[in-house]
Image 1 (cartoon, rainbow, N blue to C red):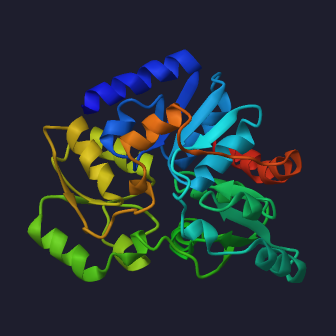
Image 2 (cartoon, rainbow, N blue to C red; image 1 turned 90 degrees about the vertical axis):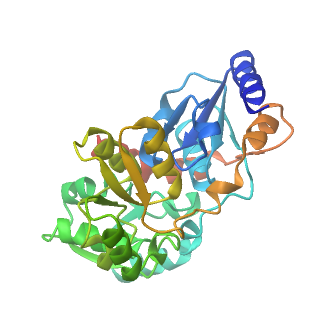
Length: 304
C-alpha cells in the first residue's frame, strides 16, 4: 500500500510540475520520494533554484515561508498547516524593534527558525550549519543573536572576538536532553562517538565528538571510519543513517528527541496535498517578502 501511494505521488509530481521539498527530520517514506531532502539552509537553496510551478513543503511553517520568500513567483504549499516550530514563535518582532532602538550598534542575527515577520526586522539569517561562518564574517563586533541561546552560546565560543547578546529562546526538543542521558548513553556504548546538534545545551555539547547541523551530522557519520555512533538530534536522523550505512550502528542519545511538529506530516498528507485536498498555500504580500528576504539573501551570500 505504501509503495502504491508513493507511486501515485511520483506520478502527480511529474504531471503537475510539483517540487517536493522535505526536511531531513521527515519519515523515510516521504524523504525517499522527495525531490530534495536537506536541512534548513539546503532547503533554502533548493527552493530558490527549482523550475517547478509548485513547491510542496514537507516540514514546518517557517520553512514554507522561506521557500515562498525565495521563490515568490511559485505556488508554495505547506503540506501540514498545523506544523509549526515553537522556537520560531518565541520572540515577537516588536521586542527586537525595541532592542534595536535602544542599541542601534547591534547587528541582529536571526536563526532561520523564525517567522517571516521576525526575519523582516533582522539583518541576517543563519542556520546551524552556517552560523559560525556568518557571524565570523560580519564586520560588526556586537551582535544580538536570536532566538536560540544554546546555538548562540556555541557560536560565541567559536567566535570569541565577537560579543553576542543572547535572549532566552531555545528548541524545547534539543534542550530537553540532560546530563544523565548523556552519561547513560556513553556508558552503554563506550566505543561510540557522540554526534550532537548545537541546539543542545552547553553541558551536553562538552561531551560531543562532533557538533554540527543535521546535514553535518549525516555527512560526518557517513564519512567516518568509526562503526558506532550516538546521535544527539531528532530521532529520524539515526534511522536515515542506519539505512544509509548498514555496516554501522546508530544509537539514540535520548528518546525525547522527537519533534512533534515534524512528525505531524504523513505520507497521506503529502498525497492529499498533491491532489489539492489538503495543505495550505503560503500567501505573503510583496512588501512582506521584500522585507524578510533581505536577511535571507545575506545568509545565502555569506554562507556560501
